[in-house]
Image 1 (cartoon, rainbow, N blue to C red):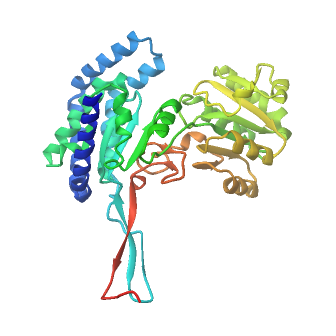
Image 2: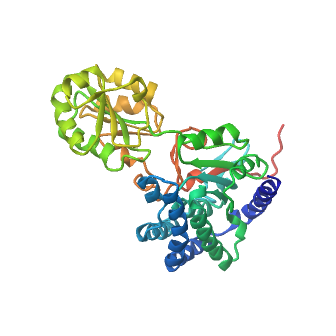
Image 3: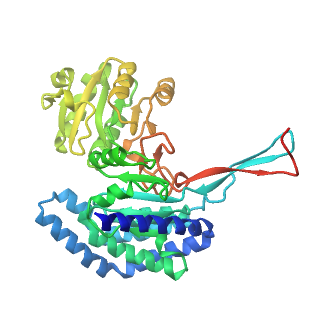
Length: 419
């Protein structure tokens, strides 16, 4: 335990020192590091996949699910995606040094705000080794140092990727400690990391609800939370039912195991008898299990009665809770009581109702006539994301480069003194 404590303390101290250097880096150097890393990842494909085989064999021996193993695998496609992602981040404008506003006071003082890095970011995540590269690239471009703690199941893959990242840093004389991967699987490393409030400015957990709750409960450092993705689509009285069917199907079926998949479908009573049988047939054919309210079960013979814990549940599977509502007010009340502030959508052709839904529903993304699957940094034009925050401080929704920075005040004077 003392060895882990010393290791984490040393890493955090070095990251804090490195952060000062990274914050000063010009955009062209940061971009060169990212592009070099992308090239190195592609050239090291065989080596990375060899290390990844060790992690995959261990996961299979433990009896992990095929979905888990798929997330863990560094396939050719995943390696290409990591490299392409770094090149995309390199192409994005550098947010550091941007002055979003400046104004002149009556006494002649020129006051403004300038965008600066957050400092040192601690990233704690589960099985996907590609997160190591995605997070490192975004943090570096935003001028931050980062300490990465991946899941124990991906330790060999993560350390191999860390070696490549640090080679690229050294190539351009950037401190190695700007990107560090914790080289142990001991759980105590997470607990120790969460105590380093003097060195680390922000913790970002990415994984299941259990991991995030553990981090929030034990951290003395501010945490950006992403608890659950309990997302809903409300099919309104004035919905185009063909459009609604496509949106609901895509929201649930395209990738049911992700945080922006639809977990609950709400249907206005006036169109339920027309919409639900057609929609249900399509879902059932795709293997979706429908758990419905009494009205839904009366309309859809293949639906099973929903239990109390099915309302507001993140299934992450081909299971869907379906509820018929009397009106939009009941739909919005249901979302307020069962949603997770992640993603909510309405399908309607009524402009006033769409505007009201946008105004009154509280979620990191609220959509009109579009799939919940669009709550993603790349899809929203951010270029990339480090995660989706469901807390409102300091970011709400997908976190791109700007969300990995903050602003400080600057002031130009000409001898002014306060009276």
